[in-house]
Length: 211
Image (cartoon, rainbow, N blue to C red):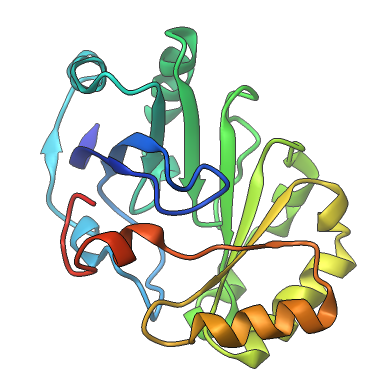
């Protein structure tokens, strides 16, 4: 697999925020979101075998592992890596950008499905059939850049009855939308979702890699 980086940090997002986590970031992405904070993962990286990746995860000594990108599902080998990590007893989070089918991901993994809003300029690339394969342990994330993004996301949530299917995360785009604005809208609407701040960017410098 082409790997951008493997590192251990505090999980900054999802309902696992605040927990120590080992991240496996795969190289390559098929989308170009306007607010992307990991453009360095588009290219480069190094080829590692599954055994080499597993060895690094074992050395880290953390029971929570996230496979991310880029877009990890572009590399077909990621499916077997997910299964093997689960077989070894790790809790595995898989963050994917919403454009690729999640149907073949091992059902024991926690999928974090990142649905792209209009502000990302990639909302037309979403595969909404993924909502048919979401489990109640999975999470759907919307990165919000504006009130328009918020209203769009809310419409998707209600149209597909997502509040009854899984955990919902609404994240203010860092440096674009003040978290207070998004919190206000959610409270006004009594929206059944979690305000999802990028905790790692408040703990560490937002420009740093490996956080």
